[in-house]
Length: 342
Ligand code: 13P
Ligand code: SF4
Image (spheres, protein in one colour):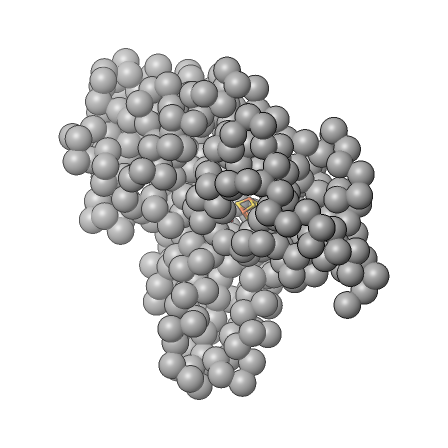
């Protein structure tokens, strides 16, 4: 243990349950060793929503996750990030004005038949828009459940901002290619005619994660040739033409479970962010052989270091506090609460 590490631990001990440190699976191991809870986006939202006595919640993850924590915690609980500049480029791919225009276009084509479903990897403003229109948030681990909730109501899904999670989920639910349309905000009218909107049961926003779109069908074909006995699991932000060639898909926590449930001596190739793959490879050494489908790192998750965490705990700068204005938080909370209930 280093001096920095010891100081963080001493501070945690002194604060007791007044301090809660949450860490996403993609964080560096030096940061995760100080976390009270480690999880995927859904689990960390649940931890934030039940943060009990914590006066300060430190979120080691990306900005949208800390925003959700601020929305779900009580007003007197303060949420901080060791690096508030750690954003998610996918979350920046949908802006309120363009989403509102798109929503109005869908309403014109098929009035009152849509419900918005917003991936938590989005800004609080987009979640607010979704909450105000009767929709729900979702994460990669419960997206299917939320789509079902919409389809059971005989409504159509307007999903944003990840084209791939939306498309993969629609296929998993048995929808056909003709049921799915892609709304491209860079094209006039989203690149969709009125007829194609009316035909679709699911419309997905053309956003993506640059970490997960790095995986290719060729990567999978190479693994099949070189390691024919290996199982391949990928995160559902991976494009469908790659995911359909894998053996399984799941959120970060579901990937961990897949590995933990595997038989001794098995070999698993994983298509997700590099920090998690490396951690699993270290943890499973001598039991299960873990390999990356391709090396792909999230530079934003990587930003937070142990030294950033230490500095935050020593100084608590106002600039590190994540505050969502209540007028936005109130509407965004509707979408997040619905997700947690579903
Ligand atoms: P999980 O919800 O699976 O943890 O994913 C979060 C994320 O940002 C994946 O890129
Ligand atoms: Fe965003 Fe992709 Fe990083 Fe996840 S891995 S935080 S979706 S950029």
